[in-house]
Length: 244
Image (cartoon, rainbow, N blue to C red):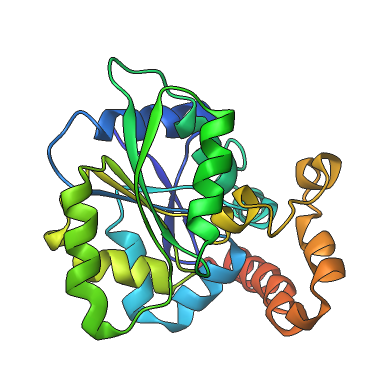
């Protein structure tokens, strides 16, 4: 039975990394489209103001806690999540799955050439997978039919959509009924990391919840977005005190 923890109205699945990977693997055994999103504190704050985004998250098949802030929020609310399950780490674990036949991936997003470079690097690191299609994230509404046709004819099992939040979640939701893949995962900037265009924070900073500080150091122009983090914590504290 699915167990979730409500963080400002968003139902985050109470799963470990291993359990999240097992859930994704189980989706591959069914001929239906399943959606996997990785909300962090910023996305949850956006959902509190965007009812459409909140509804999309509520309808997902799996929502994992991407960020120490979400896990901290669960502790404040006395509804503890077991651990952080970051989107890029979940993606790496999915690449490592061993099945009777290779899992086929379609990489969608990033600047022109990023998906192809990411794919080349991914195939050097992981065996037993296939990358059956690429598409950059720069497109007009008129291109969507062609994009969906490209994804569907590729025979992909998993679509990794790296359009950035909340665009990727809204695109997947709007086109879910037209897609023939089994799993759609919103992976944010993960393709940039695999392509070597962006770097993850050092492991000790990731482990102790200081990724935001590294990101601010590398991209100081993001400071306005970073202001959502203390606001998120204050909202959670207020929710705990008020019982709302």
